[in-house]
Length: 149
Image (cartoon, rainbow, N blue to C red):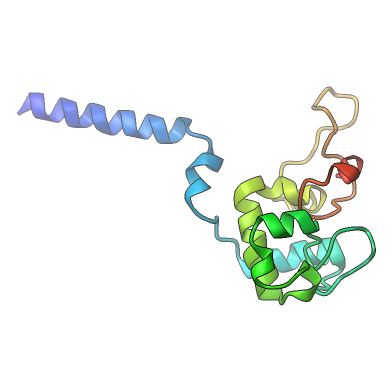
């Protein structure tokens, strides 16, 4: 009996160690991480003052300020040509996919403000490259706005 318990225990411990050592992002890569609508409403309040039809001329659209190439790449075209032309529900559905692919970094400043990302260390402490610093100008990886993020 002892020989059966040890292999099972060893297999269980190895499995647990694998799960703990695997980054959360790759664990969730199989499907969207569900986020409450209230959280998306908070992100939209931060990004666009809650205006789900926002078209401010900054290159990002909708309540969650999604960059058009990101909208296309994550399936947004099944709903509308741009995020601001899609419903709140449709924008949230696409945002869930963006979150699954990019994490909260896609909305870096607002995510930090809402406590969805850790706060940045004070400037000058050697805490990183600063590539994400800025105003939280929406979702997506637009190289033209890298200094705004």
